[in-house]
Each structure stands twice: as structure tokens, then as C-alpha cells.
Length: 385
Image (cartoon, rainbow, N blue to C red):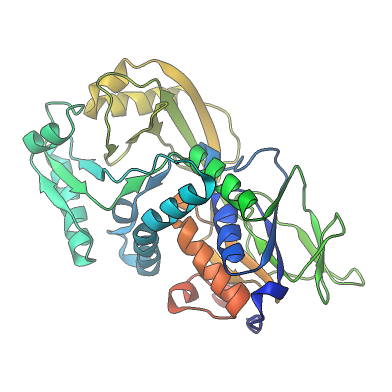
């Protein structure tokens, strides 16, 4: 592992963040808050045109990770992210002057069959073991809390700390907040080559003290030395995971809570109700499979009948950025001064503010916290992968 970046006065730092998804924008905001001059680059013409704009915006620290015994570090990161999200949302909304539909309603986990009750109970026990609040509910209690639910369910639970936002609005508010804080946002700028040395030179000729890679499932730039020699960054290629989503018109009986089952979720927003999502590892096409979409609707309607008759507004497919071990890469790469904020798979929205903190600590203060150590971007080389 290269030596950690030396701490410097943040006012002397110019940092380029490559990638304008929610990870890149949140990191840019944190770097700017610590005094650095920051510029965000993205090849797209819109903010978050990759995975973020196609996200359901769920902040599921409990549902996603409570039961993952082999991902304890990731569960801890998710819990931390969930705890700081309310303050992060309030900060962004204050700076931007507008809301992002941050909801604290909590999420419901539904057991549709007697067999799924055992699965739900295991999840509840895992939440309790990790200090995550959980409220077990009978079918009747769930229906009183969420009238949109079907009347033939077998029970479930409320996860009060699992929240959600409108991911598209979050991007817009982050963009506005960054602009008001003096962060440059340069869209339509493909960064395919970076020249290193005493500083880093981008294709537009601008120079920076640090580089943060937040490209999601997109290609990483090539790094070369002043004389053209290749500078290996030590990062594995992103593992693509295709996801397809259905967006329905809001209905009078549409849910107001996020609803999870073992194989589908429903995420209500003001402008639509999202039903998702497939997880097709290794695929990076964005073709729509109508059978998969209809299967999402059928499964959603089994727990919330209004899903079955709501008008379809649109469907889409996106590519989640995975890693070989399904955990993100956060920290300095093999190139001193170049930092990764990559590989957040399906939890980029949840993990954004926590990732921003960890990257800023390393890039500005030269500190690697115990929470960040598990996500060393060079761990795959160490493991011989």
C-alpha cells in the first residue's frame, strides 16, 4: 500500500472529483466543507446519469445488511450512514433551498407466506443483535399502519431507521448546494487520461493536488507519468449488475411506506411508485425484458393490490457498480494522491455521506479510520485476486 497522503492545509488543496453521481457529489460537498477547492467532472450531460438516477433512493441500513454475517464491516458502515443521513439531508436542503423528499416513515418487511415468517423472524433477530430497532407486527397491525397492504399476509415488521429519498431530487439539490458553495461542475467532460507528477493534469489542462475517482460503473481514466509511463492504480474492474425497474402512476391505494419482501420492493415517491428490481450479475446491457417487468408487477401486487392496476409510466434498466466481494472501495489507490470512492453496488445512495466523510479524512487529513480500513481499494491485490 502506498504511504498515506500527507495532511496539508485544505485551503492549499485543489481536488478533482471524477463522477457526478451521488457518491461524487456528496464527496465534493464534504471536501469543500473542509476548505478544499473542488471541481467535479462527468462525461454525461446531466448529474447522476449512471446508477443514481435509476435508483429507488432507499436507505436500508437494516434490511440490506443486518443479516449479512460475512459483511460485518459493511453493516457497520451502513449503520453509520443511516445515522448521519438525516443531518446530511437537512444540510443539503438548507444549502440548496429545496427538499429532496427525505422520508422518516420507516420501511416495512412483509411475510407473504407462513414459510416467509421464519425468514422475517431471522431478519428481526439479526437487527436486534446489531442494535438496530425493529418492531414486530401481526398482519392486522401491518394493515392498520399501511392500508395499501393485502389482507392475506402473515405478518412482518417495521424497521424505523430505514428511510428513503427521491434520488433524482437528491442529485438536483446536491448540484445546487455545490454551486452555491463555489464547487465547479463540468459536465460533458470525459476524463480518459490523467497525467501525474508533482500535481495531476487533466485533459483540459487544469491541475489538481488530489483526484477522487467516483465513476460508478463507468471506465476509469488511464494514469500516466510526466514521461508517458503507465501508473497502475491497482483497482479491479467494476463488476456490472444490471437492474430493471418499473415506475407506476400514484394510485389512491398506493403505499406510503417502502415495502420489502424476499424478492421485490415497492418504493413510493410523490411523482410515482417504483417497483424493483432485478439483479443480473455480469450483465451490462440496458435492454428491457418485459417478462421481468411483468414479474415485478405481479410480485408487487401480491403484497399491495393497487400495484396490479396502476398505470405504467415508464420502465428502465441501469448498471450497478459491483466489486469482486460486493463491498465498496474507499481510500487511496496505488497512486499516492488518487482516491477511490467506488463499487457501492445497490447502496450508493445510502452510503454516500459516509463515503464522503471517509474519503475526505484520507484526502485532506491523511487519516484512515478503522471504519475505512476494511474497504481498502488495494485489498484484492493483497488477497491475490
